[in-house]
Length: 216
Figure 1 (cartoon, rainbow, N blue to C red):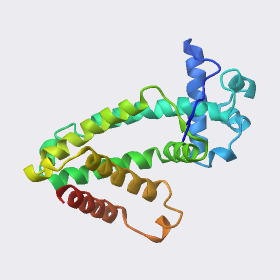
Figure 2 (cartoon, rainbow, N blue to C red):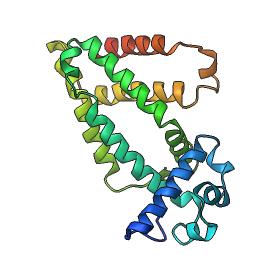
Figure 3 (cartoon, rainbow, N blue to C red):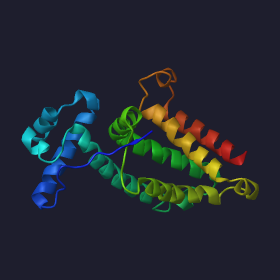
Figure 4 (cartoon, one colour):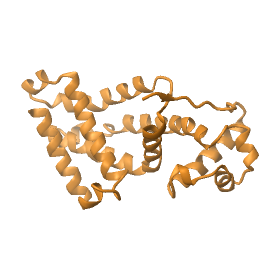
């Protein structure tokens, strides 16, 4: 699928302009928590941000042009979250393989729930219109998951470590991310809605699946 190239009409340089952009993004995020992108207008964003529609159009061509900036903001939050996952003696607290996988699952659930409105918007937009393009996004994701998963690989038995191919790593991430996507981004839609899984049960069962996959 082709990448969706959306560029800003105006890159903020002055502090006042940056503050205005932050107000726009905060308003946009708030509206995305309530409804889908297709249901939001520039006027809605302007009213929420207490700005004029003209102020938005001087910076952005349309509401879709806000997506790369929102993605950039999300990317920063993702990096901050990833850096915090194994801090504060978490490696000591979670010594064995199952405990570390379970902690990784819990942290993903927490992050996805917090940013569900952004992730859902980007996911749907990518499916319909092509991926929003950001410089170095793929390299950034690889770096993040290399660091996130290193403590997991450390606790694998030698045989499992020897079988840890690039394809297996990618499938591990796919199982982790897509399962959580389905549960927390689209939980009201079938088939997710018929699962009726308690969050703790979901985390436990996903941990068991991921551990079995790595040890197989």
